Each structure stands twice: as structure tokens, then as C-alpha cells.
Length: 260
Image (cartoon, rainbow, N blue to C red):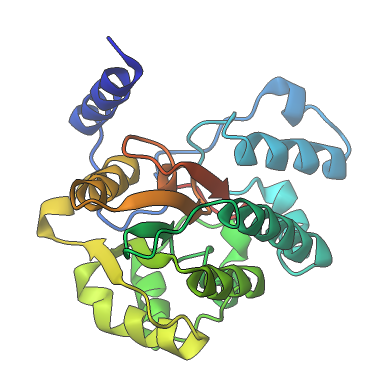
């Protein structure tokens, strides 16, 4: 079995054993389990730094909420210089790579962006919801999305703008649902993200799919249409993993939630 067949088989097995809401951000199936190595650390800063490293590196696997002792740590990170710096460094690496791509001018050279915590920041929502230390509430989050007031992430805005200037076609691929198209487009325009080629949202046929499968399928659709997917930016590994992957993928920081 080659690697592509293995990934596809893994995803199908996961789908057969997992029931998911189409807009689920975390899987509320009990308290998260942390290793004794982490749990027994007395120093919160040490614990939280190690916890954040493990979840950003995707070593922790599925997790549900920010550990209670790390809620202040995540708050300070998301509102501080480190989060901005991390985002800027990743955007700079992405731009350096983009400049090496021979953009042909035929309109088929593509960069894909996720939306939440990639182009738009939902930090104003999470300020009131424990910075990820509370279980995800779909109703209140949908109400926030309907406001269409999420601000742009500055580093991503700069990357988005410069990619367009280099000649890339921009496609947006989000886990939001089709009924949120109008408010999502409104928010993107409000934040300055204009002139994208297409906005993909979950339709009826995508209900219940893991994000990894759903986003892989949409990337495959683009490739089947002759597009060359050079780059992909997202805050979740499920934005980037699977099949029909980009030539280069760039993971943005997000210690507030996990989407499988």
C-alpha cells in the first residue's frame, strides 16, 4: 500500500468510527488527558510552553480544551508580541518560497488560505470564552460569525496582498458552512481580503466529514481542473494534511482549539 492509499484508508476508517457536526471545532468527549511528564510539572510556564509545543507540532493528537492552568498563558500569548512575531515569521517564509515559483501567467498558479485564525482572527470571541479553555459552543460562535466583524491578521493580510501581486490566484477553503457564505464574504471584504477566485464552504454533501478529508477533496477538485496548488496556509494540521496537498504548506500558530 503506497502512502496515498494509506492516508485515504485511515481517513475512511476515521469517518466510519467518528460522528461529527459539520462545524465542530473540538470533540467534547470528556476531559483531555495530559502525560504525567507534563501534569506533574509544578512550574506553570514550563508546563504550558511544553504543552503548546506539543500541540503545535501535532504530537499531542486530538485535544479538547486548553488546560485550565494554561488559560492565562494562552491569553498572554494571543495578545502579545510573540503571537504577532510567530505569524510574521511564517508569512515571511511563505513569501520567500512564493517568490521562487515560476508563475506562468495562465491563471493556474494557486495559493489556498483557510479563514478562521488564518486570515480572520476570532480573538474577540475567545476573549469572552476563556481563550479555548471552555468547551466549544456552536450556537454562540455562529452568532459571532454572523456579525462579520472578525479583524484581519496583519501578517496574513500582507502575504495575501503580495501573493496577488506576484500573480497567484487565491482560493479560500474554510470549514464554515454554506449558510454562512453571505456573512463570511461580508467579513472578508470588511477586513480587506478581496479579489479571491473562489470561496469554498461546506455544502450538504460535506456534512459529517473530517476536515482533513473535506479539504483534501476540494484541493483535488482544483487539481483536476488543471490548477497548480503551490502553497497552502492554515492554522490547523487538517487544513494541510491529507491528499492533493500543496507543494509547500505553512502552519500558523493556534493554541486555542483543534480541528481533526
